Image (cartoon, rainbow, N blue to C red; front, side):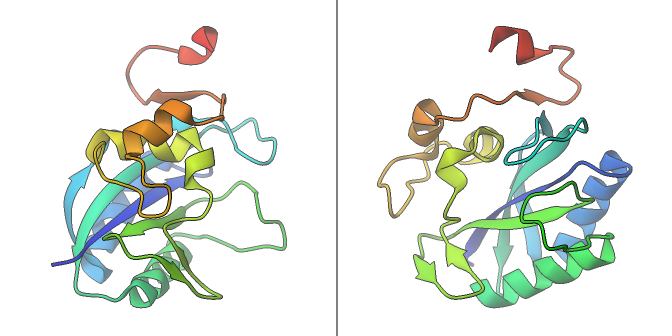
Length: 170
């Protein structure tokens, strides 16, 4: 069965409850979650917000096509209170990004796989490296761990509940 890697995250509302609901809905509408990272908190990327994002990478076995999975993810976002505005980067209750669908390279108006900006974002690569460190990016021909090691992003990313504030080390 095809494996879909996604990143689920948000910075508004009850992040723990929304994250748990997202996982339940992902299994209901997309497929079985076969692995998931810890939840990481991070600073906002592309805009300023005092609210930290919670992000989690998941691997889902699915029978859906990439476009069907995208539509299901957007339906889940709406169910969890996501309101899409004119601004590309803004605070939100939930965002579900498709990162990889197997090693498919796809460029459609509504969906690009692999996710086109993932290599620039430590908040994506850190949880993804936890569950798929050796997965090879089909365009860059580098593993997720290698992409994380060369990622130019210097924003704070830390495990929720680790008791460590890694911002002092950056």
